[in-house]
Length: 81
Image 1 (cartoon, helix red, strand yellow):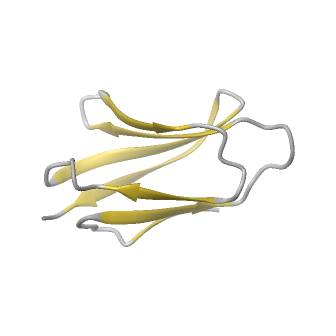
Image 2 (image 1 turned 30 degrees about the vertical axis):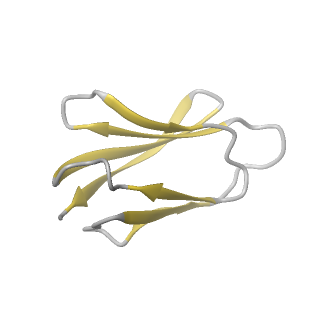
């Protein structure tokens, strides 16, 4: 399970996911719709990450979740300021 709430978001959003277990490198990235990497969070094994969105403009973004370098899920996130 992988969720981004709230969506649309303004200043912050919480990403929650089911952790895969010990020893797995969990990476969360935020990219714009052109694929440009804007944020990256590594070694997330607690099942959540708070995204600070103050530096992002209004628009559409892709939140990507990877386990050990393999993409497992993605979701569109809307920032509306």
